[in-house]
Image (cartoon, rainbow, N blue to C red; front, side, top):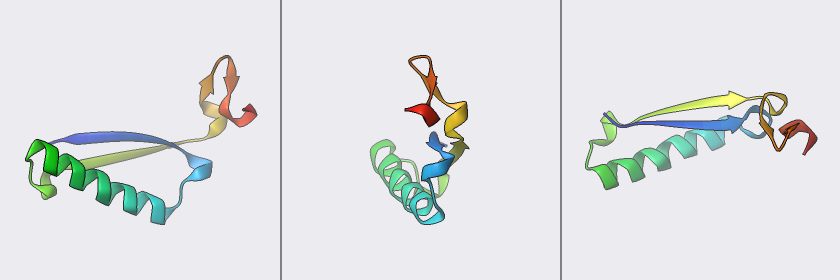
Length: 62
């Protein structure tokens, strides 16, 4: 059972994008690994930009 974790900024995601992302990533993982599509699991975690940092600054300040 392949499991894919995806982290997104909460402020930039919507239901349509997440649905399409789950569909397309699942399809690719199934094709590459040979796992049945029904066995591929996708976990999306939404993180506020204020909780994501790089280079000493939160993403909300980039």
